[in-house]
Image (cartoon, rainbow, N blue to C red; front, top):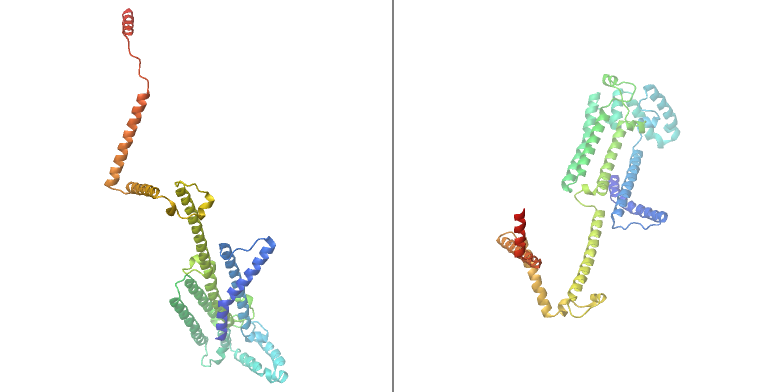
Length: 403
């Protein structure tokens, strides 16, 4: 229990602390090599560096926990004898004789008596192929199951014992999902739990690696080596299952820590680093808004003071009082009337209804009147045609008669 609490505390604080220290060293090396200052903590670049460093730290811590957990698993009977699990009975007898000559209490003293008795009892029990089959899957506890005699009874007893762990783990996942915030990580935890359950069930029901077949079932089925058998060739099923339990715990905690940092868009709640970035961006936007408001105020002061009779220098505008205090009353009245006209005109143009229709009709009528007046002025400016004389008429008539 204390080891589990220590691991939870370690996963809660060590990755964050190690990430900050590692990122500080990385930025120092980056500055010395590229001669550039490190990114500001309130920028997205720093957030990206933090996420990648955090993922690397968690991965290294995960590998460390995996190696530590695999080293803490107690040695099995085969490892104590220095043989492989698929060794036959003759090999086991030879190995036990060598172990007895080396670790007999008469040779090593009373300190080695407990170990010798444990190995001797295991060797005597494992002469029975059924007990050996159960030992490979459920560990040394099967030596205390005196009521079991057949393989089916050992399997039933072992599966019931193993189911307690899965029931407690499943109930813990459901409780954690109920009291915690909704998160897509919960679905990955359940998927990881199902993978653990399927892997453990496969290991328990797979044929024994022993070359001496304990039954017709084992003789008919062939044994297939798993990746755990390749990595740990002298270990047996129950040790692989204990290691899978540790790996499930580590991966569940690592998934809860890494996913919110690497994939903040998938999470409903923003992580701490993203909250700091949002707060920094809000501060920068506020500063830009203040600067923009100040520039607009100066531009407005410039336009309003241009109406005043007294000339002003642009550099002195920031030290002048507000225009409302220095402008004359008639100028303020004129500006007020003009602004009211602009507001009324915009309102008439934007609203839909009889007022806008009347506005459009009046505007069209005025435009037609202005166009007619311009056309009349253009016509008045054109030269008038010359008047027709009597001689021209007579000449034209005489020419027509001659023709």
